[in-house]
View 1 (cartoon, rainbow, N blue to C red):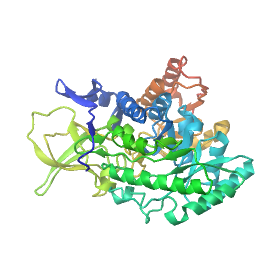
View 2: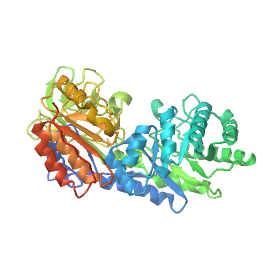
View 3: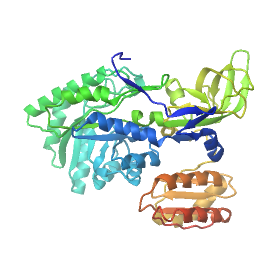
View 4: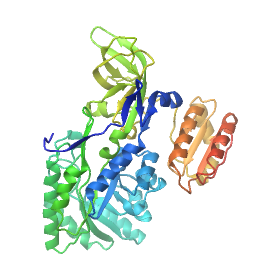
Length: 495
């Protein structure tokens, strides 16, 4: 860690009257209302993190493009869109989520090494800001699709500066052995090739060297490389309008500290001050990490001669970072348990893998039924969740059915519901995005509460299909939303 760097110690949670709270809201009450495991996000923390970037960028022309992969929750995206954020996406799914949440397509940059033809086409149709191009083959593909559509594709070339981000090897993306970006020897050639394409408009240069950086020096090494490349491009009469330095600002999960945006952006702004270039940044973790808490309940205490285990109801399929990166994770009791003595526990989930753990060797006083909070899980938490070994109690059998043909699939959906063993089912579709079968009123209520609070956007089409036992409940909830969301609702029984 760079000893000269400035760090903030953001605390969204604190104990009030012996109970852990987020923005003075009781976490135990949230768990009681919505069940566990449950992700909880602090709106204020996200807002303040975003505004810290705005402040650090000062008056220099800029665009903050939140990295959607960090947390693609529609409420989070909607909040950031209202703040004026742009978005960095890596798939058409993320594109559609951003659009649904009210994001401006002209503030979207499309990254990633494997863009499919349908993804390129959709991005061109909605008019995104640019593609971050990662290979000669991708550039040719974008040209081909743009020509077919008679559109011009704006592109920024992602370069690989061979800079060591000094982070976990799985999230280091700026070394020459990594799959990302154009290697140094080929940078000028791909710009010349792009310049020759009839349907390509070169707008920038892009670089992202990795995630979870806690040392500012790699950022400075990278900007120096980019500026040298810009000078080389200028000599062959290729002019750019923006420079994109990516994201990567990290969080120290043990101390709950993170590098301040102004710590490195002030120096970067000084370095580019003589260039008439808009500065793009793509923060993700640093915007949302501190905002998230994952609530989980202790199901069983298992004490053995060699190791004590607290078996909880969240697992690696809910929160993957400890299993994937052997990452350290802070775990706090929602309420202190004074009725049992402290012991050293591994906090483990119910999945049948030894790698299914949240934390190891933690000194806690625990009993079955106690609530725990995993903090700083706003980034790469819920977005990294998978359906592996999941109970079907919340959402099962994901489907994608265009709303205009949904009626033709009711019989098929009814069969799926019965195959899953549900006595009744509810299919929910928001445009073409999220389709699943929800089978109890608690989780349905949670969905409606989330939408009521955040999705204050016109033009959302809802199609709800439920059996007769849920129709009254659904109708009540829909009526409560009449003044907020323009919606189309059809309620039919699943036969």
